Length: 118
Image 1 (cartoon, rainbow, N blue to C red):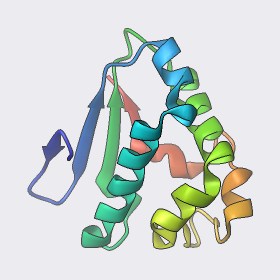
Image 2 (image 1 turned 120 degrees about the horizontal axis):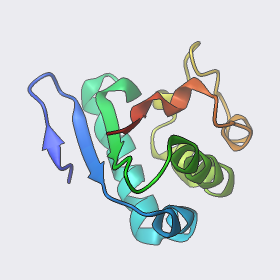
Image 3 (image 1 turned 180 degrees about the vertical axis):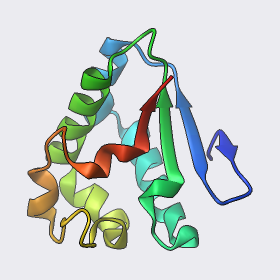
Image 4 (image 1 turned 135 degrees about the horizontal axis):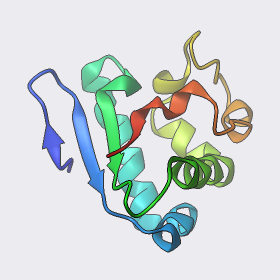
């Protein structure tokens, strides 16, 4: 499960990936299944993705590389990810109401606020 669960219900997943590992995210069944499980877990927090934090090591990857990897993940696995918990995406802030909407997100989309680099 998550690396850290805070008392306020925030889930934190720590990732120490290098660029090559990031590039493999969209094709990694293990990563995709884990991410879908995490989205499903958000049902306990009112489906609020701000309660999910993926924290990457900034000495190994850049913010652009991380966001690009997740854009590619969302583009290639949109249906699986969206269907894991549509309520996470269906709100006025994100405006992701369909699988097609998720396929079109860009690195500047606010959905990616769950990604952090330290």
